[in-house]
Length: 322
Image (cartoon, rainbow, N blue to C red):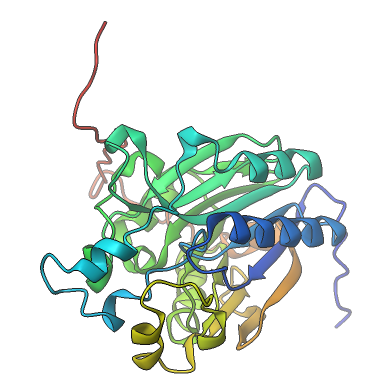
């Protein structure tokens, strides 16, 4: 059989950059510089979308399980608590937005957010979508932090459960173990999602099976993008560095970024143990082919029997009225 040649310039196709990089841990400015370099590389490779891992900016909270994070009122936890977190209102993502606009390229970026609309000090694991015009299209705060993450991140809401048009595709995304939650996935499917973005702190064990499973379930492309973290990635001025290092393995997060097609087969098998920008072009026609016999929100749904109610209101402690 003759292999089909994909024309990356066709509006029916999309070129994606899977940016598997390590942060400059707990250093927002230095990590932003790394992200900027990666966006430039993605642009040189003709990417229409580049995706970064969960909480990459300024770095996943690996310290918690390595510094007795469950000890109440711990001075160690108070000292590490993130003053390097991202505050949109302070302009911390302005550079990324400008680069997206300059390169006409969309960006999905995992951040630790410190939002003013919740007082400016509590932290959220957030996935931000920036469109090719450099505008923030959605900010999704993780619905349920996983296990020890609950000692760092607050519980999010449904406000960010949106999808976005990107060339011929409709793209949406979730953070880490949210991707195991059937109902949030269904929210995105029902809005026409056909490219699902799953971001992770970085482990092959997380991405190697669920990526293909979601692709088969949704008949969508699924891109999983992970961070990377090794002992050597901790900056020398990291608070309580010796305690963290003494309780860490050589590799804390080994990556596992990958891409599956709407039939569940690999287009990019998991990339492990290396920083890399992996570039792939996908063809929208493959989605239409696979949904001919199964479309979970279309002809294979039964809204007369089961329907989903979604609250997309941003949860705030006050609503100010003039």
